[in-house]
Length: 115
Image (cartoon, rainbow, N blue to C red; front, side, top):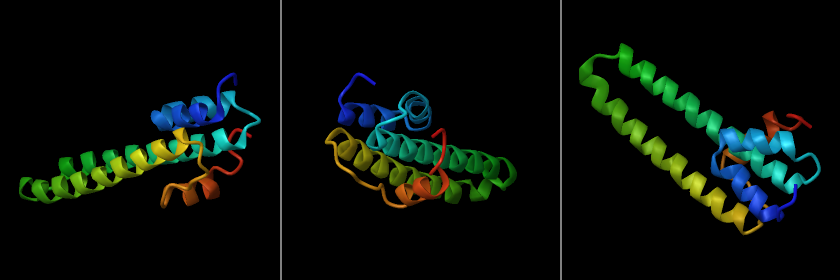
């Protein structure tokens, strides 16, 4: 791609799942950008799955438990936000960094994804 690797990595991580897939398809050579794209895909996929599970729980649980599920959802969502901000800062600075938990999962499960 015709952009600096740190900018491409930051953009690959910015919209997580969507931009990660786009950059994995378009970028074939730069492993730094591909690594950030894989972490973005993993973060986006886990966040999406979490939100789907929360919606299902809210649909099947009694109304009295919605507060507990909502509190859990807010705490986990705040965690996703912190991981996303950490990733963005490091990607745009051009640093090799594994986002906690997400980086290891991305390496394990997306090692050969669109390679």
